[in-house]
Length: 90
Image 1 (spheres, rainbow, N blue to C red):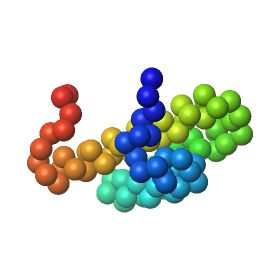
Image 2 (image 1 turned 30 degrees about the horizontal axis):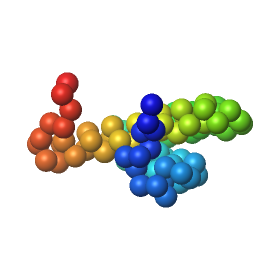
Image 3 (image 1 turned 135 degrees about the vertical axis):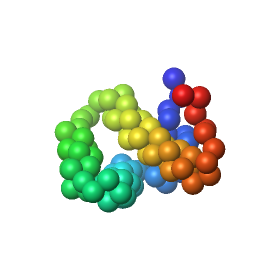
Image 4 (image 1 turned 60 degrees about the vertical axis):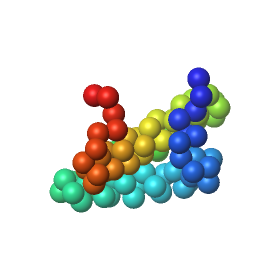
């Protein structure tokens, strides 16, 4: 199964720290809009901390794919709101 990270820029997808920072940025943005910034940011931090000592390459790739999926979903959601177009089938 191909990695979801191909939808992200390589400098973001290949670097866990940059991926973490982008997830935190998006969490702050979403949290600010929903008036629960600390809760959303803490959820993202908790997921990264929970897996920070992972050594299995397949598990690491799965975690990175999950983070990439979250970023892609948020980008699509915001794009749909801005353009008024629906990008997904659901």
